Length: 369
Image 1 (cartoon, rainbow, N blue to C red):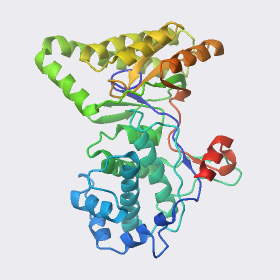
Image 2 (cartoon, rainbow, N blue to C red; image 1 turned 180 degrees about the horizontal axis):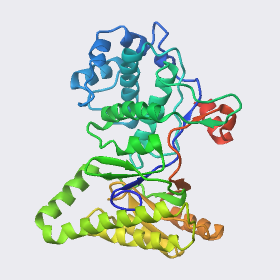
Image 3 (cartoon, rainbow, N blue to C red; image 1 turned 180 degrees about the vertical axis):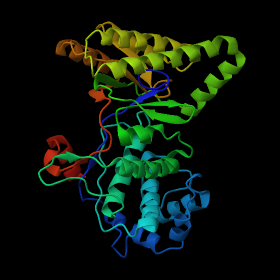
Image 4 (cartoon, helix red, strand yellow; image 1 turned 120 degrees about the horizontal axis):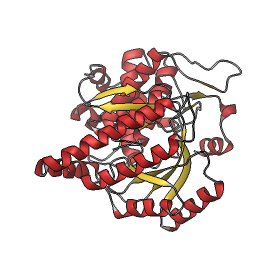
């Protein structure tokens, strides 16, 4: 139910910013630091025996919570992010040698808990940074370069460790969010299999957060219940969503070689049909209906992204969309109480940046952390 169809996932921009500031308790060389205490504890040995086929054990996570002073059952994003950081730092140290003394600053424009894969973006960047500073992967940035990416083999390693971090946060994730954060572009996810799409374009979108909280678990359970209750009705809907994904994939892969504006009306129709199907499945919400109505009044086409039931929606911005229309749509969406950003999907995956390549906004956020 993500992105343009039922099984396609497109990447937001995900980057590993090269910065060396963080709280002392995460410095592995300080004798009084939290990480140092963990490194010198029996917990490290148990994490070294981590089974990649399983999520971290309850005992391991409870021990980390005790070290970090996180209450049992705490689910705040900051608590889960700290837990994932400690686990990954210790596990990487156990496998590749101690992570050297570093300062880490995390900054993001992605809202948490909105179905945008913010935890996966965090885990991917963290995995890349920790693996690089301990020498498990290279530093690909050469003198004079503003950005660089890792080799395919190194990206595979980053993705595997990011998935471990996601397991700490979510328990049993699919792995698709960390995969698209690692490789970027667009991926097809079906029956547990992740396949990168070839040569996809970068698409401009409006990303709108309705700020309506939702439970993915409840929404998924509702869809399953409908399928079991009305299989003859619901299964064709799912087949149609799958067909939209396949047709969308064909269009996306054709666009780089033939960047015709005629592709965009087709994608807009896919948006509309897919959104109607998702409402039939029961994952729509009045806030998302309102989002679609507002953007339609500006001749723009929108659909939900993520689990639905609120959360976020995306609006396609064809190249010929006037800046005035975009600004008017943003103003009307904000007037509804929504948050709205203009961004791109289909971007490169995890990237190492030199400090000189960062925008003033990002530099300010990092230096003020």
